[in-house]
View 1 (cartoon, rainbow, N blue to C red):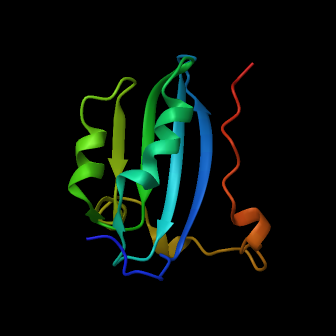
View 2: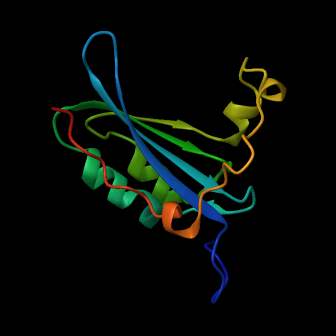
Length: 123
């Protein structure tokens, strides 16, 4: 159920690291896909590899689609550190007032900025 041959999904990836008030490090990957795109296991493998070691204690994947392949869903289960999935449904139904936000003029990343930056290890 992936994409048709010769087509590419509309997507962007951004990786972040958050330090909690308890000094834990959470790896976060934001995947900006078209709503009709189905996330494949290959879309999340590199994030798992980069964030699967210390110092990370939790991982979060935010995706702008609700569609996940069975292999991608299976890959989320039983991970250490654990993974939380935030999908389009969760974003749309959150208590955040999305209408109060707007993108800054000129905030769209260039093609070069579109490439994901590697996760850097906290000092």
